[in-house]
Length: 258
Figure: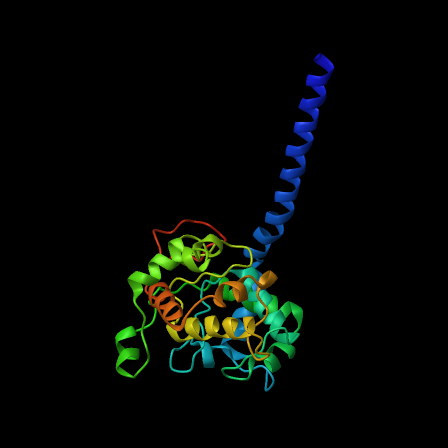
């Protein structure tokens, strides 16, 4: 019996060691990606502000000098976004796994950049601090944009829609959309027009539209968005764009506050 107990203890220890090794494999590369070297950040800042000649215009022309994007032209907030997510999106544009159907420029721009340059831009944007202002929903409403119910959107983000088998958004995107690191982007303070457009694009893809967005990890967003109504999408976006973050968490995977 003594040998059996030792055998069982060793087996349990091996299982725990295997889990720790796997978690380290998952976490360490992402953490390293989230804290890129300062040289990469400086190079990325130069590209963001000035571009790289005719084929790569300055990123700030569409995304703003503060990286906040614009509801007027449908560009997203990039400032303080998760590094690994930003780099993946630039890579997906470069390889046509994602198509820019708003400005129709990102695919050509990303292709004209080297892998290192894409990393540099992602590094700079991750460290670019800007306030979580969100969209001006009153202005959008006056201009005729349909604005959802933020209170109902909060319910979907935190608890999902059980009857429709829609999981809570924060299960992958972190508390109130503050980000959970890895490849899951921060959604809090994101622009309303961008949020509604991308959710609708994932939904179109889930229903067989070849023009829809398909670069989500393991089809997770397509599965969720495919169950959302127009009202659901508007409500979720109305809540997320107005979310303000908690005090700075000092988490390198979370955008946080200036």
